Image (cartoon, rainbow, N blue to C red):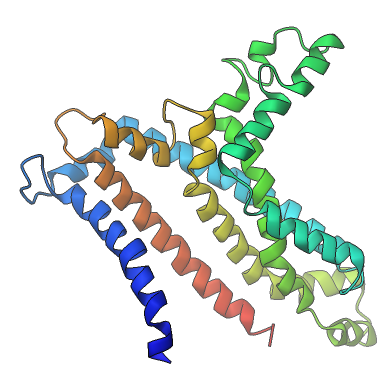
Length: 281
């Protein structure tokens, strides 16, 4: 068994573990290669803190909205046949759209609601949009600002929620509803006393996964925003020019901050998934 896993373990070590260790460790060395903890003070700089706050804000908004919208879709799908055409189409589309990101997704939204986008021009011609340079925002087109990242991010967050939360919805047993009805319970009682408490760990676990997914996303934001604003873009900017004067290897320090956040998120996700799996057996 271990021999069969050896190629995968080699891949994980060489292409995941080693680069992560090198990236994080670089934050503990100065420009002369001397070990130091002085670089960690970059995490207290207002510029860095604002970028972390912006990343948290975009991730939180897309996680909550994506989780609510995705769970509503899952609830609607429960009324369809498990092997029906609609369920198969939604599952297939979610699998594809959850992985659709990067430059192609950015281009799609630029072509739709960008300054010269199709919808922008249609609204302008209809007289509903007076200044296309400031549409959907006050300081320029919203799509090219950090808050505007919520629009393309939700494009892959909602399908990801459908993929991760649907198994929990399917784990609800009809016998629980029948027992509730036999004991005189209503549908409201079933959802508030039985279904929601059972689904809560899976729901919040999926929400954490969505938050982590948005927090670590880079390619879509890089194609829309060129001047940073969130931590993944700040790391890229720091690799080309140090943005915090007097502190070396800022990119490594930011990577350390991201790793800490991701570890905490994935630890919480693992705990909630283990709790949710009790009801899926």
